[in-house]
Image (tube, rainbow, N blue to C red):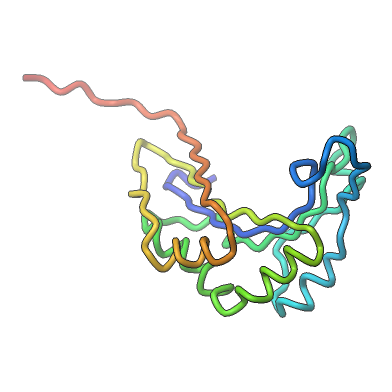
Amino acid sequence: MSENTLVEVYLDFKKDIYLESIDYEPDWDFSLQTVTNRLGISPTKTRKVGEWMNSIRRSDLTQWKYSTGKIETLDFEMALNKVVDTFKDKVDIINELKKELGLRTSFCAVTHVYEGISPGYSFPLNIMKFLVSIDTEPEIDEYVYGFVEEDIED
């Protein structure tokens, strides 16, 4: 395990309970291959509703996910741009997939902070324009691992 700060950014497509009406029997599945073929991009992770996630739990959603993986960096914007640069020319396709398949998207940055050394969090205009164009809000998850502050004497 790294002892340096890590950043992972991902964009995913999913269909789950949040899109369905209480009165409607939900269909939480969609063709992962359709998303891959239309985008021309391979996912880094997928899961299907009903698929075993471990020995006791099944997936409650279908998800197509593209991730940077964990990058050892404090350059938050660089990590965001790795995903946006991959998808910026696919806005129309993304919006068509969302409408046709009833999907929602998530754009999330996950940081693993060690020794109190955290990246600066900012979303440049190009990132925000991309997210607005695909009707997606940014999310940040931060995991901070213990560190000891030194006492400073006066």
